[in-house]
Structure formats: C-alpha cells, structure tokens
Image 1 (cartoon, one colour):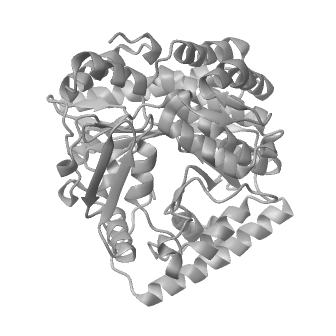
Image 2 (cartoon, rainbow, N blue to C red):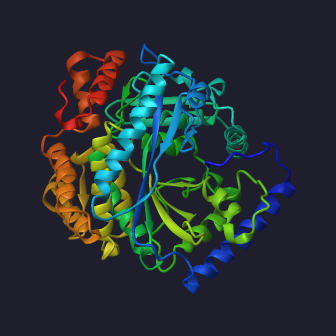
Length: 472
C-alpha cells in the first residue's frame, strides 16, 4: 500500500482485468519458486517506524504535508491520517554489528525527523496508540490527501455495506460505531523486516508466527483507546476491526479476514500465501500497470491490501532478482529507539532458532498464544513446544531469551551486541515494566490525565533511556 494510484473510481471491467493480472503474476511467482530462481541472499533486516505528529497540547497535529516539505526524505512517507508518518531505514545483512549499526541509523533518522517537527512547533512521538486521541480526530477531514487512501476507504465501505462496529473488552469495555477506515490510523507500529534466502523462507515465515506471542508481549505499548484501559496491545483488535472484511461472496463477513493472524502455516512454498490471496480475497484497488509480469506489480498491490500480522512480501535485490521478505507487524512503535532495537533482537533471534523446528506447535495454538499475549501481555498463560502451560513472563526469562541469544549467535551477530539488547528485554520482563505497564502505572498514580501522561512519556522518550528504567 505504499504506492500512490492515479484514480479512485473503478468499473467491473477494471476488477476483472486486475484479477487476471494477479492470476498471471501468481502463476509466474509459483513457477520461479519451484525453479529455485529467487534470491539466496543471506538473512537481511530492516524496519518501518510509524509515528505521531502532536501539538503542544499533546493532541494530534494534522500537518504531515507541511512536515514532508521540510523533511525532504525519500525514505519517509505519509500514512492514512494527516497526523501520522512513516520512517524507513536501509536494509543490512544480519551479522556482526548489524544491531548496533541499525541503532545508529535509526537514532540519526529519528533525530532529524524530530528536529524537523520542532520547526513546525510540534513534536514527533512514537507510541502504539496516542493516549489523547479522540474518536472525533478520526474523520475524513484528517485523511492524508492521497488517492490510495480515499480509494481504500470507498472500497472497504462498499464491501462492508454498514458502519464499522468496534467492540473491545479488556480491563474496561469500549463499544462504538465508526463510518470510515480512519479508525485504522489510531494504531502505529514498528514493523520488522526479515529477508530470507529462498531455501529458508518457509521456515522463517512459520517461525515468525510462533514467535509472535513472545514479541508482542515483550513490546506491548498500547493499553488505552479513547480513555479506556483495554488490552496490553490494543492496536491488534483495533486494526483487525477497523478493516473487518473477509473474502468473496458470503465469506465477506467470514472467518478469514483481511487483517488477522492468517489461516495456517506454509507447508512447502511461500507462494501458498499468494495463492490464498488470489483465491480468497477480492481486489480492493484494481489499478493496472504497464510493468511486466516479472516485476509483480499487481500481485504486490493486492498483497498490500491484506494485512496478516506476519505478512510475506515480494521484493528485489540490487541486481533485480526477486526475493521473499517477512514483515513482522505485531509490534507497536516506541517507547524508544533502544527499546525497538531490543525488540528486533528478540524477534530475529527467535526467528532463527525456531526456524529449525517451528511447526511442533500447532498453528491453532500459536494463534491462541498470540491473542492471549496481546490481551494479557506476559501475564498470559500459553502452551509452548513442550506442550506445557507456561506463564509467558517465565517462558521469556527461562526459555525464549536464551533461545533468541542462540539464534543471534547462529546469525553471526556479535556477542556484545546480542547480550546488550537481549539484556534490555530481560530487565524489562524481570522488572515487569514495558510501555503498556508504564502507562497503566502512571494512570494508577496520577489518574486519567492523558495529556500529562503523554507529555511525560514524550519527555522520557526524548531522553532515550529504555522503558524499564522510566520513573512514574
């Protein structure tokens, strides 16, 4: 969905032609995978950070057009709402001091982006859900003026045929109606990319699914929406319900949704996911491109309108050779760059270790673990590979952090960096404070003063110390 489109109105013939193109490109990708013709490049990583523009009162500042004029960064892009932005870095091979170099890269990107915001007398903030956000902020007037977002809104509303019904029960209960897809912009994320060599792509994808409960619990940072205390990572149900449409015909409100955990592990080929895209999900944005089949423009656009929490992507190496990349989407933005690199270290290490035996955990159990962790954080009780029930906090400390350490060693990440970043996760878990818990403790101490909470959070974020050290 990062690419802009030329128009927002489509005919039935547009949808038919687009589907034909996706069919051709899916068949071509299957053929290339079977031939072993995709990239064998060793594991490579990269990131996307979504962030909020906020004014001096800690309220959303819908100024991203003026902001991008000042920022002038080709790796930055607009999100659905005028008060959200996305920042990207350049990929690196996952070896040696890659984690520390990633940290340096993101610090420099964030520093420049924050300084640009201050030129507009606003602030840049990375947090999963902005605590001061109100439902009245999420209106079409605050939608970024890009055709792709207006077209997406129209097509989803056409398929739904009714207003969005948001209902989340956590520590408190929230129920409301919403008339457009702007609710999606309530949630911002830190998306971790893992490019996998062809012969390991299936294993890495399945391992990412298994690892998701651990990573979302360790990095939770989104407990509040519209003043209600909901899940440890409330982004997950918000995003799933904001684009709650399924497949063809009677399945439009069926069990397999466009935002979700997916339907199963991949068994033999990564292209199984793209075949499911074609078979199950109708096109949303039937834009026709002049590019040839081997660049997969229609397949990639269609895939960009299906948001699995672990989403396979097709990209290209510098020499033009196509590759598979896994987008691990479960984590929220923030609280600091240091925390996000620690989250990435946990994910990369677990993905590597679990890729050698990922499917011992049934898919249904991996899915249940994920939603339990999303709701309850590391207080959730999950079933692990040994078929034992674990409290996730204990599982992280005794099994998963050591497993991630071994995975980083296998990747060739230097021992010093592996220990530094995984120790942040260990201290966060043993000290029982991630971003969500810090926010809840702040409210328990100071009440539901969300402006004060957000201002304090911003001050601590700007100091750069990891969240487990933050005072209340």
